[in-house]
View (cartoon, rainbow, N blue to C red):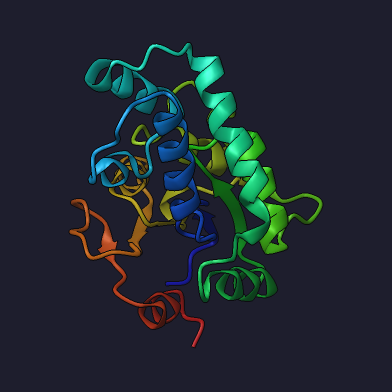
Length: 211
């Protein structure tokens, strides 16, 4: 059954931005004399900035205040954002769904500054596009609040909605929101309970009845 609404994660799902997030994080930590572990990015993928900061303080002794830390990370990100590209096939799916009249929203654990930059980079920053950022909710993913906020904005029942996510954190939020959740990771990993594992772009398109 084709969904009436599709809610997209941003980083790693619509745009191939996870490598830049990793580079920004490593650059800031290195500038502060902290050597990041090899698995740091895998541990923080899909997680909002504040919980990542709290983990860095606890495990690595990060002493910089949160506002200073996030400013440094975002300055690095913005300085390199021009090289960002869409995730292959994702924007085409977005546009095909739009042509069919399916309501859509972008639901991200990133701050609005990053979301709006990313939208511009992949060319879908059209007037009226609905977005839910970490600044718009009390609790970020894996809490269901961001996706339920998207359902409120589109005025479509969660049961008739679909989530597309690349992280276990985000997919867990989609399942908790009572939405069909399509788990489309960039790297091999197990899907959270209740999510449908999309192992390829072709599988995703077929599930959405686009082919």
